[in-house]
Length: 290
Image (cartoon, rainbow, N blue to C red; front, side):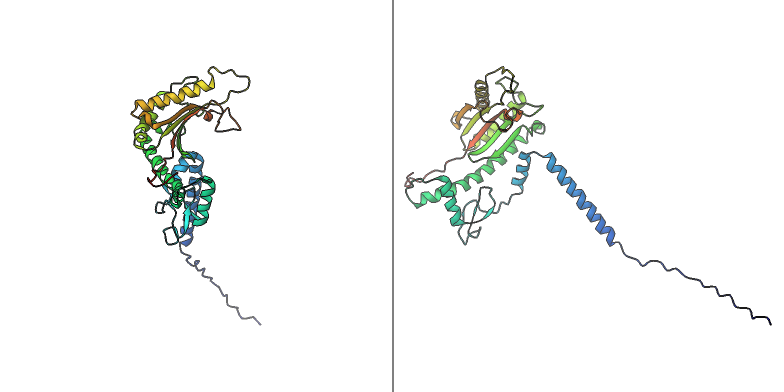
């Protein structure tokens, strides 16, 4: 008996496409790549800028809405005082006043107002020094050679005031070796900042420095005479550019006694001439005794 023919069943499987996931991952990936690019660009910029340029950027983005003097509990700083960096401090006002008194030392004053004047003086100097630094940098930006000399001109704030240092670097010097007369580009820098220095009330102290002689080498010029001569040359150029003589407080040469890098006094940046804008003393009321 023949078996009945079994029907052939053909099963067709229809493959459905994957569900649409959207393009959100593409946006997230693009944001990640952009962030990484910005991060590496920031690292590159940090490695390529000098300390003086970093200080300039920090001052440019520093908050300007904060008061430059101490404030009471109801003031803009909510009972806090400004520290030396110029930013808002978490130290209470009384503690800041006590710290300032300790730094200034025990000085006899004629009244309590004189004590307040001593506390407020550093904050006023900081504000004036920031303005002086900005004016000096603006004057130097007009020079087309400023890009090449950016590492040779260091402007910074110190405890005594604002310093403008003309520094030698490997491959570029501000003075010829063994000479007290500067290069032409150094003269242009001094002539560019002279009008700004004339407008500022600060008295100036010009100091010459040089690097130490390496062991076994022979100096062509005695360091004390060299540094003093360079400081005098800077003073003469500033005076010739219109800076009055009564603006100068001192002009001295330090030889190789004050290197920037004490661990390596032979480096070329130790050869420099520094112009210090001394912190101005505020005028005293006639009824206040020192």
